[in-house]
Structures are given as structure tokens and as C-alpha cells.
Image (cartoon, rainbow, N blue to C red; front, side, top):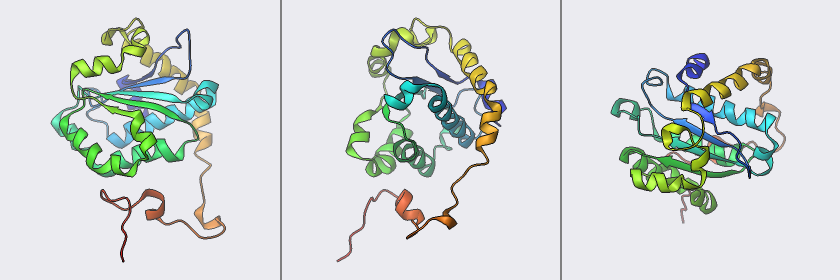
Length: 219
């Protein structure tokens, strides 16, 4: 599945600008190449990218990273894979699991359905600080304004001055493939909750209740 994801060339890291302060990840969601790939695989590859940036880029660890996700290719059938659970856990992992700072998440050309899911299910469980770093844009004009500060480094398909999406994706794929055995080695390490001392955290304590309520108080 990961090799198929590499072949889609829909995830890339922008080249470093002159005043580099951390990486920017570009994702192109739901285009013709990824439509046959489960969304969970796409999400897995995204977090593999985060893992790799932690390994090779000190700026990512110290200053954090940005994410830009273009939803314009998303079809109605692919939209069904964006379940509340997947969206909720995706943002919780970005916020609470990785020891890195997400400086910003910009969703451009976002379908109304995803915007509604974010506002009703995901946003209520995020802190105010994280909410301020997430920008959801449904209109083309607003999306272009949101990307103005990194326009020079964007792929030429997005009006930027960098290489094409395919060329930049190939460069990042090569980086991932060079570290194939590092990823395989990392699969050996995991958290064994049976060995945790003290009170074990429950599923609800870690991820919250299913639904849109953050806390339920009963007199």
C-alpha cells in the first residue's frame, strides 16, 4: 500500500526558502491517483513523513512545521472516507502525540462536507491555541490569500516559483525510500500498556468520548 502511495506523487515537502524556519508539507487529497488507496494509508504515509522530518530536519523539531492540504480533487465517493473518527484522530495525533509543534494547517478548496465535519466533530476537542492554527478555506480566492506567504516556494502548478508537483514528490519519495530500513526497524518499537505503572489511561481518557462533546457533567 505504501509503495502505491509513493507512486501517486501527491505528498511532498517544499524546498527550503532563504529564511527557512521549518518545513511545509503539501498534500493533494483524493485525486485520480489516490482514489483507489484507502484514506488510512494516505494518513499513515503522512505520519511517516512527520517521522522522517523528525529524523533529518532539526528545524522541524525546534520550530515546528506547516501543512497545506488541497482538497480540490476530492470526489463525492472519496469524501465518504473522511469519517468523523479519522478526522478527529488525525488532528489529535498532530496535536497531542508528536513532540513537534504544528505551526499551521491550511486546508484549501475544502468541500462543504469536510468543513461541516471539522466544525462539528473535530474543532470542539481541540484547544483554542490549536484552533487558531487551523485554517479551513472553501473558496479559491481565500485559499490563494492563505498561501501568499509561501507562494515563492509552492509548485508551479499552484503559481509558485518552485519545481512541479511531480518533481518535488519524486524528491521526497527518494528520501523515504533511502530510509526504508529505518522505518522497518522502527516497527519493532511500540508502547506496551501492560507495563505502565500506576493507573492505566482508558481509551476515553486518551481520545475523548465519541461524538462532539468534550466533557459531560452530571450533578
